[in-house]
Length: 92
Image (cartoon, rainbow, N blue to C red; front, side, top):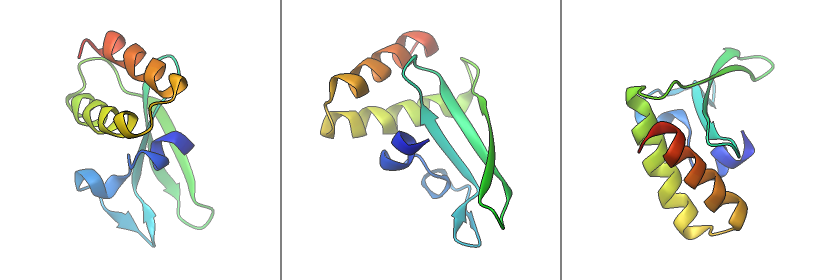
């Protein structure tokens, strides 16, 4: 999830809001291209439960676009490969 936070893939970007200073929803793109969505489930401990977004999920395009914009400014091979894998996996 660290790369997702660095890329700004947090709830307020997509109107999901915050609860007690924590984003209710965060997203991350893993190295194989999967987009994971984490939902805040325990405010006290800051615990999230996550799951992969299926290809075709409407929000996948928004996450991909924001991640792509971040990768342009952080062009490390690892980030570029994750972006390419995400593009291929989600057909974007």
